Amino acid sequence: MTVQPIRYFGDPVLRTPADAVVTFDKELRNLIKDLLETMQEAGGVGLAAPQIGVGLRAFTFQVDDVVGHMVNPVLEFPDEDMQDGDEGCLSLPGLYFDTKRRQNVIAKGYNEFGDPLQIVGAGLLARCIQHETDHLDGVIFIDRLDTQARKEALREIRKAEWYDPGSTVIKVSPHTAPSSSPFGLGR
Image (cartoon, rainbow, N blue to C red; front, side, top):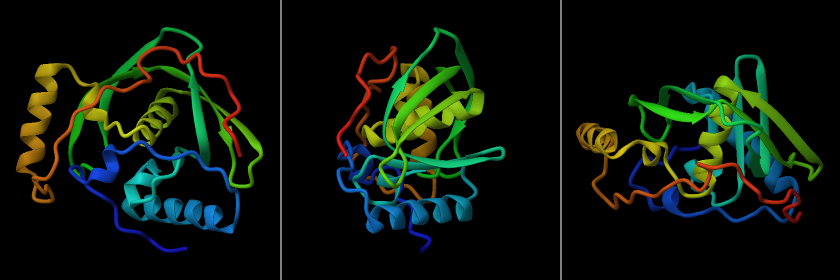
């Protein structure tokens, strides 16, 4: 286990959709440990593999007393309820923007051993799961902001001392509507 450097906004790995995990081995378990240790060291509530430069569909989270991880997540939304509130990201350190998310989520995927896993989340846990799954799709949370708020967020990002004026690509999250994707990504 090692704390890894976190990639910042502008790094192309954050805009590249991650590959599905197909091998559940010691290397994957070490990745999960690195993600968890890096997230905890940075004081975050979630961290996706692309944020440490690994293009695989895996993330960790720690919301309140719930600590876990998920591999190859597929999201479902049991209702239309929405939440609105500040959201931040370890890849945009120190910046928070009001972001709309679904209030409730059901995430289906696998644990580090390849066993099926389902997480039902509400509130902050639902926000975290959606945020981290967006990272796996190459989407950053500011992509979810309306046009004016996104422009304001980009101005703030450009002022940040960590910002590297490389590629600034805006994408739209594929998770804005309930997912009809079947559960059962390959292992």
